[in-house]
Length: 141
Image (cartoon, rainbow, N blue to C red; front, side, top):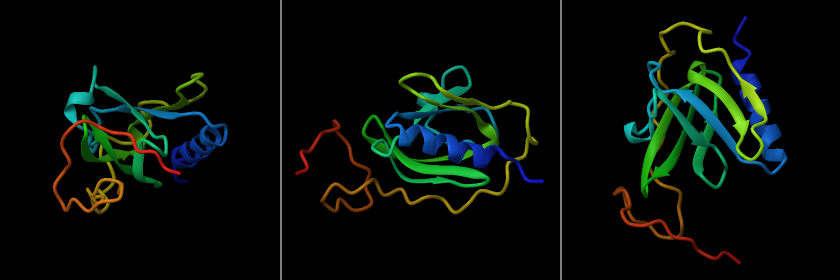
């Protein structure tokens, strides 16, 4: 049988967002196949905000979680094997689910096509260069 982890991750993610809370994922960053900016890793783990306003092109697949996110104003493609997820919880109240760290093998499945590194569009075409500078807010009416 296939692992129930990706199905539980999608269900918990939907439950958290349906309740207008912020989904956070705890990842074992030392696991093979995890691709996150090294500066965000603390003690071999990383906590990432999966809220729709924080990421672009979120794909909660059966073997991989992928999305684009900005760290210090620079867009990064994030790639996480589902087996590297240790917990998914709501930031506001801590409710969610923890997963065993030892489930599955050490070898991740083959990596999917790399996500497009294009940052979420905010109205202008800056080309393929990553944006630099301070983040900003824009009023949308």
